[in-house]
Length: 370
Image 1: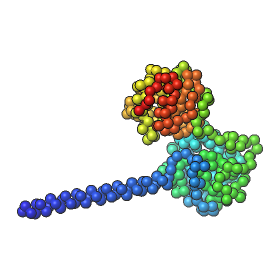
Image 2 (image 1 turned 90 degrees about the vertical axis):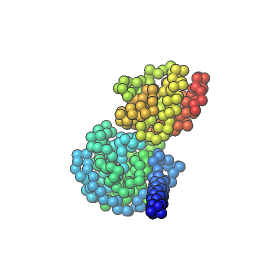
Image 3 (image 1 turned 180 degrees about the horizontal axis):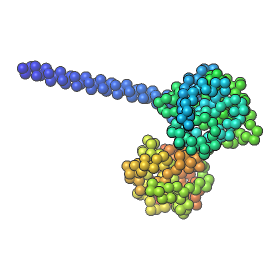
Image 4 (image 1 turned 120 degrees about the vertical axis):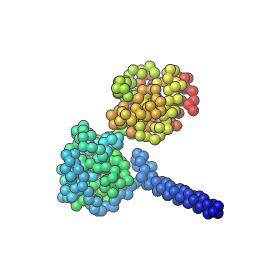
């Protein structure tokens, strides 16, 4: 009897050990898959000089069929556009890079239509929020609503904005364009009729201009942050309690202006350092203002989670970020007592803390932040 019990105990231990090893194996396999996916689908902003050119679908490939609702709820299929060229853009009005070129695409829409090319945005979000943005940006092109689960396969691992130019039969007619600059360049070339002989062109940046149009190099949106000596753009934004906070009220004090997002992981990493900075130096000349984006409740919960005691103001989408010339988070600007940017933008936790140290040292009031 005792031998049987011992055997049962040993068998139970072995089964538990086997299950544990099997579970760990599944976890390791899943981590490997996630690592491969992460390497294949980067989310950072594009850099034409630092990153390899994206391949996309080969020229003359038939773009996969799709059917999506437009803003009125009517289902629209890719086949409905046959007989016309289509500039198909993977889009999100919550994306700062998309917003930076929205008005320019709206301006090009008429020229595109004159060349029998229809601008079509495959956009995330609901019809109400998209309709509001369409009105604000002056867009009159079709907007089709998609979500993460049903976007076309060529956009499955892509950020926004990216675009394909399709011919009248729905085939890829130009190299894939990834990033705001390249999407805008593709739209400009399409509007000027220069896409008849671009099969070998992978950059899409050099072309003759439309009448009255500025060169792309002149119209490109600033995305690397305003430079030292630039007057800091003024703002008057609501805080988490609805009270208005104005940059003008901080004249005479240095301001560390931090741009954050409640859904940004590196922003969470920075948060305890900001709390410590505020506790140590709130009364000796350096003010801290955090600019959040997105939902007020999400920002409030983050503030409670981290114990923020400094002002948190809410920008509308990326509007203030656009004025400061950068769409990333977390980033920070040091603003001098007279309202001028005192240092180049700091991107990431270490750079922001270094900015705070260097900025405070000019006043002799900041100690080294751990």
